[in-house]
Amino acid sequence: MADRPQGRRNVRQEGSRKEEAAQAGGGEFSDANYAALAEFRYALRKFLAFSESAARNVGLTSQQHQALLALRGFAKDGALTVGDLAERLLVRHHSAVELVDRLEKLDLVQRSADPADGRRALVRLTETGEARLRELSSIHVEELRSIGPALAAMLAPLA
Image 1 (cartoon, helix red, strand yellow):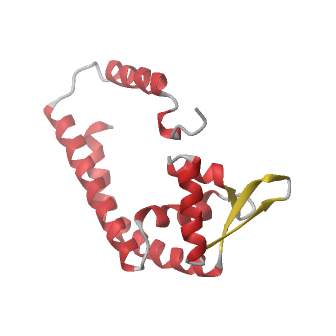
Image 2: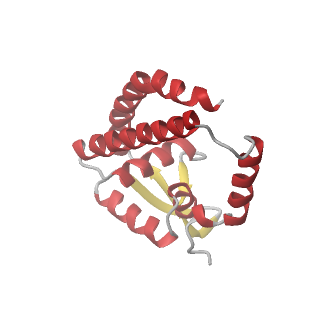
């Protein structure tokens, strides 16, 4: 069961959250609510497509970019365990190991034994990985600044 993706862990909780949300909103959604949700989902997909393209343009897959971002954004003391990285990416542990293998070959990350527990591996960004992530993050922040007001407007009917 430890290999199950983290995103599937709390199916019962998600179901009850959906029920609570429906009850909080009176259980009925207006046409405007559906339109707002549809428009927001469309905008998210467009942003993800933009992100995938930007990653490809610098020689990375979307998942590799996400891994670099997770390492920089969530690492304590500059490193994450492979297990923590798997959780952040919503993938199985062995998939994260394979991803780290590929990132190491590209000199974007380095892996080392955890001094507190030698059975665990810690993953850190290299200088090359930091530079590649900085380049991608700059492009992403620019895109988010341009679409941010539209995203906020799409969510307004749901507030």
